Length: 167
Image 1 (cartoon, rainbow, N blue to C red):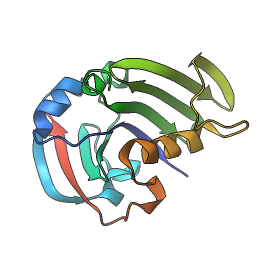
Image 2: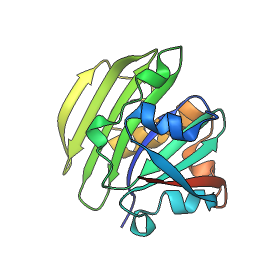
Image 3: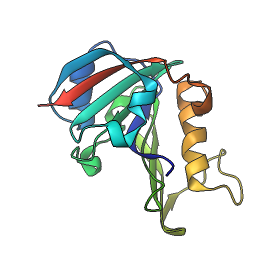
C-alpha cells in the first residue's frame, strides 16, 4: 500500500499555526486535536479530506494534509524568503504519482514529477541529494531529513503532532 500523502516541509518552526496555514495557501484552519501523533499524520486512510497535521521535528515543520486541500495553491516560497528551505510534495505510492517542488530563500529551485515510473516534469538544477538512479520517493524522504534536520525514518510514530481542520 505504501505512502499516500500530500505535504509541505519547512526548515523553521512557527508559533502561530493558523497564520502559517493561511500564508502557505492551505487556508483558514481551526485546531481539532493538540494531542495527535505523527503516525496519524502520515496515514492517509485515517486522514479526513480537510485535515491538516502539523508536526514540529528537529529544527523544522512537517505538514501533511487531506485531499480537499488544493495542493497546487500550497507553496513554501513565502515561508523561505528570509533564508529558509522548503518543499511541497506528493507521495502517491498506490497510483505511482510523485511530485516535489523545492525552494530556498524564497526562490523555486527544483521541480520534479513522476507518474507511473516516467518523469513528466524535470526543471531546475539537480540537487546534491539526487544521485543517479535514486527514486523520487527516496529523494522526497531524504529532503524531509535535510530540511528538518531529522531523517524521516527516525521520527517516532508517537512523536507529538497537532491536528487542524480547514474551515
